[in-house]
Image (cartoon, rainbow, N blue to C red; front, top):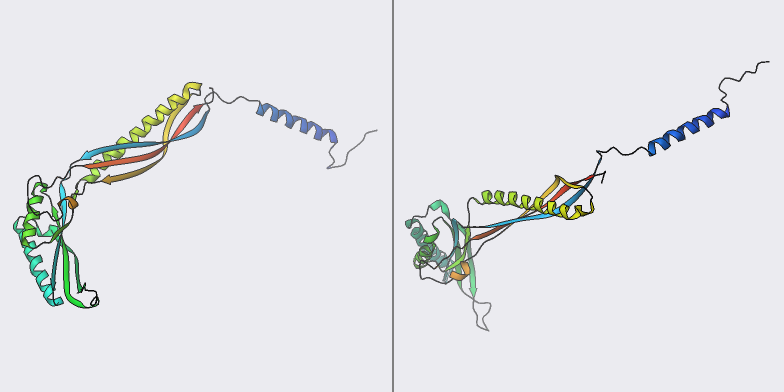
Length: 255
């Protein structure tokens, strides 16, 4: 007599067989060896640096002009007269008017310094500053003497600059990146002594930090009026660039 099973009814031994088959597949997959060419990825972060000295080719001279009188109107009038003479001296020396500008102007009361009259106004002070861009650096000393005689009271500052600084910066960034790469390669050579099979890969990220330091001769020549060929020395710019580079490290899994 034949026995029939109902539709949808699954004998228990089918579940057992299915479970055994699945276990066998998983075990075989876990035991499969990694492919010989497989590469594990790691990274190394290093600092690269580069610096150089360049000669400036432009000077930024800031002159101070100041007057004092018993009324604000007189102080301003005297200031205008002095400032115009300084401007005339500069343009007469061949400085382009577009390279000269007035950057500061102020009129303020002057109070008595006597103990019993500290709140008493005894006059008014008018002051301004004139900024000059000078391309002929050897001529700076003579221009200072010229403007002092024309009516300027002091040299507020004297700074030097380089017009094509960006070109030098680009060179330094390239040199700093090469320095970082050399350091990373040296580090891997030191670490590869354990047979790790390390290789330097492509850069993952790069951070550039530039810094500039320039000599300021303004304080050295403050209040000094006598011109001399050796009076002003522009010196050199020390330009430095630092980069932080993260490189990929390739690790051969066969090692």
